[in-house]
Length: 238
Image 1 (tube, rainbow, N blue to C red):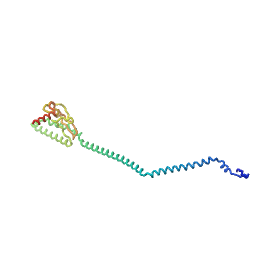
Image 2: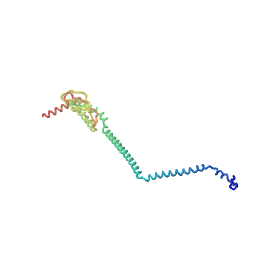
Image 3: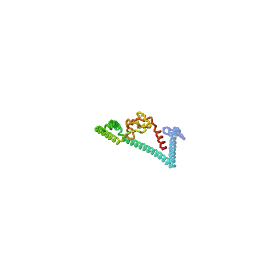
Image 4: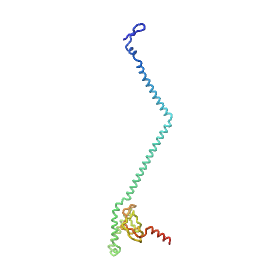
């Protein structure tokens, strides 16, 4: 308890808390009030910014809708392009698989046909080894020749059912894709570059070459072009 002098000269008792309150500096009170004011200003600014943003959205809703529509159009166009590319790739894969399957079926007999070609060659050699005169003199030999010819015909017919055909180019123009030239044969009576002799016939499976025909090519005669020109001149004179 502290005594305080009064104007009348008397002492009035005071509590210690009252003394401490009187001795507190004014800066402390100001500092306690300042944060409250700053907090109020900050909340007001935040509210003002939110109000402005809300006003902007409410002011131009069409612009927002247009932007969203443009974005959706771009996404749809991109997805459509991806879909078309995927469909095209799928179609290409399907077509390629179909062609490969058809080709595999078309040429499936190629290995077997190649293995049977020497058999056909041997049958032809057996037939040619017996001349018509010898076959006419000996009936047994003639029967054997006829039997071999029938066997050859049956084999060739079976091969033909599977698309195998013979290449016998005697008298034809030399085709390097289907004929193999073994030698040149001097023969002025035939155009140069034509097949004068066939040593071994060739075979094809559909449009695929199984074996080229081995041939001898005529040399010494006029070329096919010269022969055609001479034939045209003779025709004009006639």
